[in-house]
Image: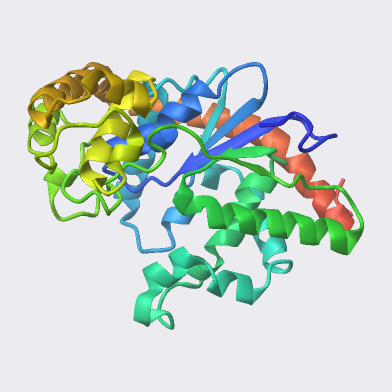
Length: 344
């Protein structure tokens, strides 16, 4: 992130995940691990469990509460410190919903219909999906801009939504002749920002895949992790010395990327070590690295989940801190738009 990309704004990173349950290795490598690594002195970090987004489809109320706690446990087990960062669930800070409505008046309907994720999720049933699913990107823009976030770590699949956030900020600033919202920068980096299925290297690893063998869950024990890696789809060819040699080998490329991300190495460094070897040698090494990394996270998640009252306390404190940033920005937005305030 360039420190001069949004001059005049406090460097602030915002990101979040849905409490959809069944968090996987893809969530860890593509999001949670990166969130923890971004904590530091260069930018304030604000992390959110976006439970309002989850409601674009029907949710069982008690299950939603439990999955929200589970997501918070995963954040903290992955290294997100609720003292160094702000960690909260979206619905506890009303500025998100209020700002989303204001942005509904700024964003254009055509922008929403162009969103690839809306097309994919709505399919041929677009007339019957919730209005919230169509307006989802405006709420995402509100999540980010309510904190005047200067950067957002995103996966490739969310990049289009961030581009819409930038469009909303630019249009608002232009329409009202202000420099109120930053043009938020995407942070897309790392060897495994998009982790693919263990059974099909052309598909993203997902909890919705019918085959549990396609993914590594953050709740899997060491034996399950090792077995899934051992049975992961590969090919019979030996490993090359660089990533160019894996151009047409998606399953092999995926496993190399996973190893590199878990070990904090580059894919080419991994290939240099395993060049000429087959997956009979590589898979046990990958399983060892995966178990060493994920087993402590699974254990810590369990410990957090054993104390739901403490999770609730942490999320409540985070919401107070988040609101202290969000409320003044929301009120200034209302002033700019001409909304009358008469309450003291």
